[in-house]
Length: 344
Image 1 (tube, rainbow, N blue to C red):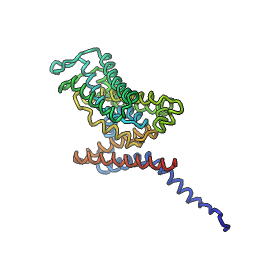
Image 2: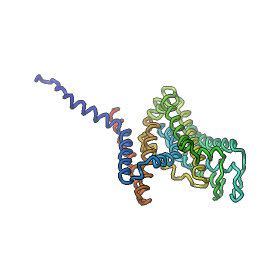
Image 3: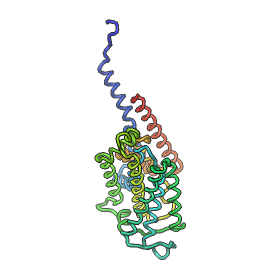
Image 4: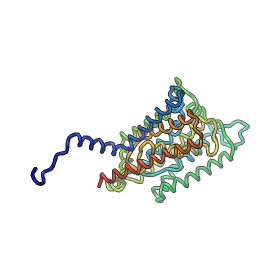
């Protein structure tokens, strides 16, 4: 062999290296899907009642409100921001739509009854306004989204407390009651609404100019600015989208659960963030999407439902969910490091 001559790499070795590189680059997408398959198989074996059509319907219903809220949160996280006010905005919007609906005489709330359409519009206007405040704080004042939405979480919780003052409201407009608690052809309306919103979010992110801008802002904010994008407008828009999705989830959730009360949606903050992150959307922005969020929703839905079927202690259930979220965060960070190393 002549000095300096390059030894060609065997074909099998090249293919193996290419496969390993592909697996590393797609780890964020592959890991959640494999987790979903493993959990589904495990619970199907552990509990015969798990793998039934009725239970699949239960899982879909259980993740519907989370899915609606997670649509907007996906936009925010794709821009490398965070919204900690989603649960509080869902709660205050659900309370607001009940506040503007005539309640039964035994409900001790000094509310302002209005026609159903007006109650819905006012509730949506409220959540949109809170989203605008978040957007203003983030883009105009320059408050980091973590701090701004943390403050908004407290503001929305305060508004909720003022509206119901510790009481529970039960009635909401008829259309909200139908969408939140009724079915068509055996399929709950709330599942249909969640599916339509997830589809709409996917179409916007995948096929519209605004969706491309969201990925550009999240992937490289400086490059997006140099290319002439109005980055502040994009960031403000995703904060409003997140608030409106949270509000819709809150209104339908109130109808689904049958009551509007303080702190009703508190657990949905972690659930929604977990759905987006566990599904594989990057916390660093620019990677992921609604498809990832759907996988994350199913992972959480199968996990929660399956643990109930095998009678796991409720406190252990919280621990397991936390460990799965931690694993997703580790994969997120590791995938980001691989991406940075490849860029170098």
